[in-house]
Length: 541
Image (tube, rainbow, N blue to C red; front, side):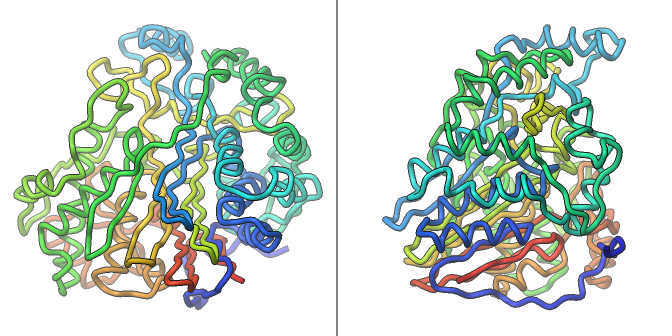
């Protein structure tokens, strides 16, 4: 068995991968291969997306799963551009007063001093993934759920060797497994995280996946699995009830978009943070970034555009059924905001709620394209590692902690309310580079996501980099505490000159700079690239 790798160094060489019938890019090789298997069996990109997501649930279980939410942006072979949102809300009994009182009882504080917990039962919202997977296959796919989930069931029941980056993340999450079911099902002998290369079986999760394959999503919202979810949350002091699950439905919102560098970029609308990425791109364009050759000036302007977009996004973006959101993606809005940018760094820009778990959250992204022209960017998440830390009974289903993004401040735009959907960091991306040239893309990692979108697109459009080179390029990240974090590989001369402009520049580990994937359909030719900071691969055929 290999020893722990040095995760801060990337010395392998990759190039952009090309194919004609299918391409799948994601953060774990077995999951990418599962998507390719489905394409070979006659499925399309939508079938392959769900097959990949389900396999990631098994082989990268701290990051994603049936107990979380799922989102997609897509372009169909017929030319339709759309979105799928499978995102649950807060329990119907989750009033501000009730949640404050529950937190106060648990923490021993006054209700007025209560803060939304990062983990545990009160952070659990309705999981949307089971319905999202089912709806994606039934509405857009060709195969049965049984065929699509075959590889995921196989790896859960027969076992898989744990890959390097995932083993490290699993170990970091070990203390977050909160109930007996979580420890028994996701720790070796109930005591420790698996080591690199160690073979792991998840039979309870395998059985749950078989239920989805055979019976569809109904048992998760109206049957025995729904009972297990509600009973687990309530036994731990949470508010989620079976009736909350039964009322869940998948949505198909219209994507929001803007143009940048001659391309059109699509994102998810609120309650997701897609508007942050679009506003940042618009501000960057208004500041002249597409024509900027100097790397110091380009990085400075992109970072400042990101700061402004975060300030607006975290002030306004919320569930639009509860509060209106202004037109943050408009060019006029960006032109006004760009006036605040000068040669020196803006100080004390508000990125988000200080100490929010979204700062360092991580998840999975998968991108798929097929030879017919279907292109899919698909995200499935538990939010933080192993989500709430609770596993529902003997199901192997880990419940997400998306409710941690709610606030217990009555004046905050994301104050908790019954049925309200939390602010969501997850943003699959879609870009039209030409008349018949489409790319599904994304960059995972909490608040890294929109600024990762901006950097990757700038690499592709402003600097005209190949797909894989655009992902390999060292990244920066503007953080909640006001620092501009950079990777150790980042150009030291550029970093020094940014510091002279007032940026508080530091160095952080690759883990915090996101997980990017791209799959592209260009006039019948497929190409793809994968994140070098993850275990994954891009598979083509």
